[in-house]
Image 1: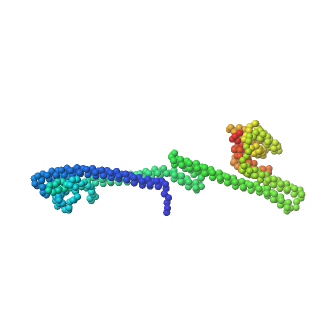
Image 2: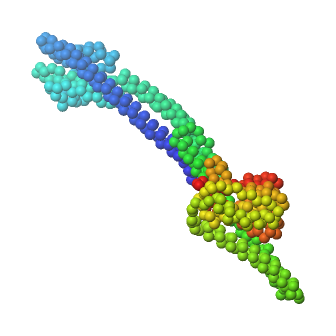
Length: 467
């Protein structure tokens, strides 16, 4: 079974590994240098002791030579006295001449033959795990050459070194364990935001687009968390927008199919009736009128859709448009429609100008005013005006009609959406007027806003950024 090693675990193991190696290596070098320095000091001390012992023995040998007693027994006695004196310091002495040991008595073997007659030789060797300083030189020459060898066991130094080794080992193990625990806690805490980031990514991948990281602090990881939250917010908004657009397109297709169904069904029904039934000339005329009405409705629908498609594909010509002239251009057809419905229409305009396409703005205002009239009962009132709101020039259309329910205000600019479906179809309206108005406003960089309460009328505000 293969398991993934997390980043913080890799950092943890690598840090511990490097630290243990560097710490132990550094401490070993320090201890080794100290030990070598101690050995060097002991060797210098031993050489000094050797010189003292050699001078003392030399004087004794010279005295024996003057007394003609320079033979094996006196020499052994002299060396034995000196060796006993230095016994506590673990010093041993060996003396020989002409390849034969004089002291200690009974020592076997062959003495070293490669000793310089003029130079003292000092070495350190190890025997049975113990360090020993060995010093050799020619001691005295009288008909024969006498050689002296000094050996000192560094027992105290070895004991101290072993004690230090044990203490170092305990310190190293204890310190490494403490560091491992502390580093584990710190890394786990430091890397926790990354673990949360991974968990949040997994949640988002599983479909929870609202998942976010709990950002704390201001370090690099916290900054990464903040940027991730912003990115997640952008992704969520984009996905919601895509979903909303997809739903809007699906609603458009559904509504468009529904809009086509009624006139096509009517046309087919009347045509089938004329074809299969025995009808009079008058009935044929009436059926043809119904067919013409439904055909006209389809034609109007197709023209409106084509106009909307054309506007999306091309740029519009922008110029300064007088609001007074704009209102005058729609006044007659709007007032005629209002008179037929028993509604009063009022226009309030001045010499203000806005940047836009006059023909499209005429269509915008005509549709808004027409909708306002249709929303009113007999005796109602519609006001078309230009206002200054928050420093912007705004075109407003206000009516005191039936109003729009709050839950439907966001939907009224969708193609084919109708608040009063039965009434709109009876009047032959396509349900594309407000969708067209929204598109015209967007093409002018303007905002269109609907303020309405059910049974208390509606106010439509089209705000222009430039004038």
